[in-house]
Length: 301
Length: 281
Image 1 (spheres, one colour):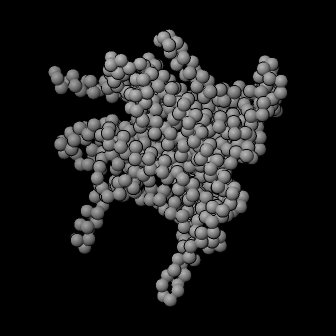
Image 2 (cartoon, each protein chain N blue to C red):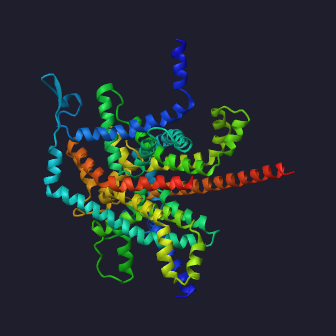
Image 3 (cartoon, chains in turn blue, green):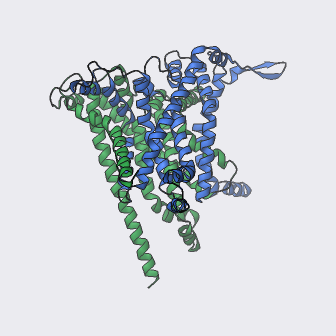
């Protein structure tokens, strides 16, 4: 008994508990669910429990795998196209966010020091108000009898309303709008720490401001660029709410397909297979992101 | 290009981006005071839609549910977030550290639909075996708490990184047990970070529509779920009124919390300066 209590005591020491609690939490809610998705994606519709996948042949267990959903995704034109167009829209969102956000973060980092907390707060503030409501607001702006068309028509700039809603344009406006702060924040965090002496040195050595920017500022802000791009690209691939509210019938996004497979068709194996393929697509950017995050953490400590 | 032109260019770039960010919010607020049934055509000012809001029992019930879920999920998130951040920050080497840190960052970037689907399928399998849990408040809470923990971890980690370990060491030298160190030294220093983590995870939960839709059961609709189902059908002036109310509340909360954090920061600096001058006397 004494041995047992000793064992228990050493097992439940502070360190084990501190590591064990978050570990169990994330294992149960982050890792196990993904494994279950993987499992259901290779099950048949009627048999989604583990036991029904194992059949006993001559005393040995044999696992039945059903790749029908994957075969269907690979052979169906529409799925392939939807994946490609999700990647296209996500990439476009990232590029536009970077080209708007980089100069913005750069100017913000160069703004007078006492103004910077204020400017930062103004970027964060919309981020705190409901994302859904802000997307809905774009709907009121972009529809045919919407605010933008009404204002432009009353000013006489256009005669007939512009067709903006339910097009790739409205989708991109919504995506860039929602993800821009995710690009600006890591870029600003990075650029505001840039050591100005490098740029002075470059100027002393005869580099033009543009050349100094291109050869010094940009390479030094690489970590911010990567963090921002990944924070935009990865969730954008699977975005559901924005294409549902602002996109049209021809703006295909895979998040919407997954949703429909699950909620309208009730096809769990298919929805899971769609999710697994999506995870495979974002695995590489995710690995890059994780690698950079841990490298940054290492640099700081 | 001379410096004036550069300055002009950079300022107008920033102004345009801010206009882009605030234009939808401002129109949302303005048109919430519009009397017309048509959301986008201005007739005259009225509080009509706010009155309609008061009688909208579906929406009020949804707001109450959302507030409840947001409060508890924020508490749970901060609790596990502190554990995770502490663990990743203080224990540099243990087996499976990389796994823990990538599990903790996954929910931050993983598309919501995948997180929602995977959690639901896990909970369904669990129910299959254990007969528990029913889909409803508890399952939504779990989903939000998972997402919240990931965000709380980031907030707390960045604060832990700024704090130096010297105070902990000093406390240990003075004979504190590890848990005492945590309770008497680390936790009070972390308090501002805990407050901002709580507010962040609260708003995340209050805002979420995708996870809730996957995880909720019959009879449990959160506020974003109600708004989303109305917004899908078309424009609806009551949404503008709800939006304005939440925007006002959130703006006040954010400003108040930023005052609180800067006040705490100043207080801390003053105390540190005081301590230094006392020791040097």
